[in-house]
Image (cartoon, rainbow, N blue to C red; front, side, top):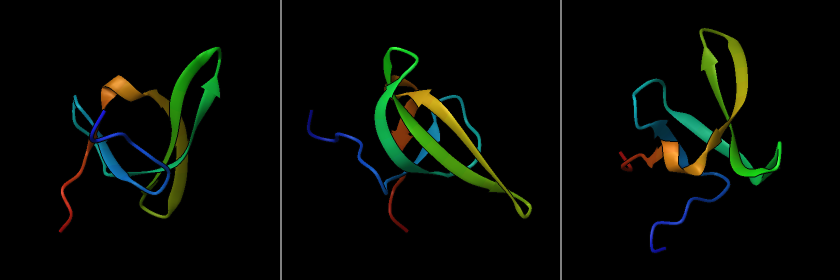
Length: 60
């Protein structure tokens, strides 16, 4: 896959939402997922997402 996601990439969910940074890609609950983090005001939030649900953000 040419645009393979990797740690450090900035992504968004295909369904929308905040820009997130991929911290790690690995096996979470028996599936390969990306561990992403983002900020809501000053609160840091982390969650895992299936790779198929993410889009790489264009560099600004």
